[in-house]
Length: 452
Image (cartoon, rainbow, N blue to C red; front, side, top):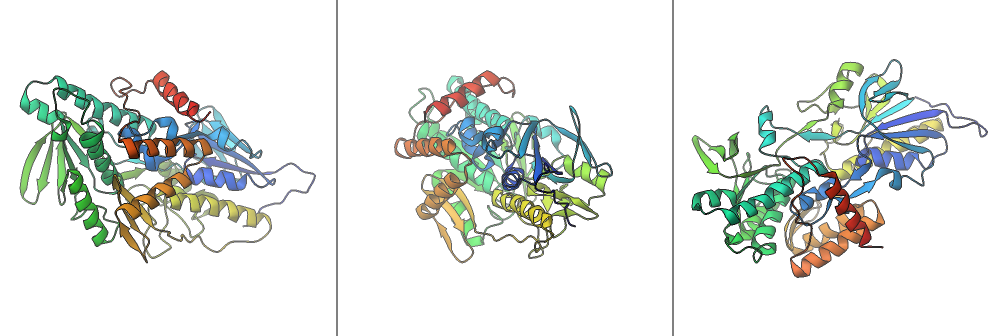
């Protein structure tokens, strides 16, 4: 498909609407914003971009929300062709080429959908109230609230059994998020908080990591999975594989291992198992005839467009791209970044009457941090663990943080924590799972003043 190119004295005529300000949408907007030929509108329910890979550090009090969040308008302020709208897309009309927002409608010539994924409880949605997932700032703050309230409740509890339940933390899911969360909890309980309480010994905390298959970090090579498990156990985490969760209540987790079923008394369950596509996948299926996979991701063409809808593209975690190595690309930030940039370049080429080869992702490797000086890294040709992998993890995450002030703040926080094993934002905010906006704003402002 060839795009119409405006003459030099015309205003941009090709209207591009991007839904979602995550990695895929943001990288598409930044690349398209370099061209004077497009009129780009980025729509997101939030006014900020969130660096999701570090959400677990907000949940465990190492970082504040403002450390890993950047206002979308500030990021795109120099891209004069990009307009940012804080709104929610409710529907799409491919025939009329328009999206329906909560505030009205907006026409488009090309639509890029990058709305990501959310938690998946495998048909047990009632677990969401007792086992929060980790996809948003609110999720992270709710986790942080529950984690630190557990220690506070244990400090006041006189019954040994009830105290043991408050000091038992269960992380469900042994993928990268679960492994990183369990490791951060161990660092928190056994090091950062060890001198802060008088009635309890936080070293008595039990942290259990439950995984349904036979090893943690299933996408990684078996040898790195084994090293990750050993590192977690060295930190004090109990790793239980081939363990299926069958029920979660406010007081216990019921698990099945083979034919045996048992209950784990606990007051704090953290969910890191499974994702499902955002509701925009269903909208695209209903309105544009898109085919979805079993978790609701949209199956796309080799150029990331929808079959039969060359003006609609899907990028990031919402896209099921299986045109490379006969298996879907993983839902990780680098994939979303590359997909967003690819679609932007494809549209720029089409404006010139040219085209691009099908999208191909060059996997630079994967990293998972486990704890202090402990990580695993898989670069295909090189597999490393321990301190070298941890050091690479640090620099990679600093590099990919969006704004300079975020990079500086996180470096300062990590530097201080590395040598003191203290610091961070161990605040209990919100009430009954609701984000306290004034306290959130205060945290963000505190972070910004660190570099002024």
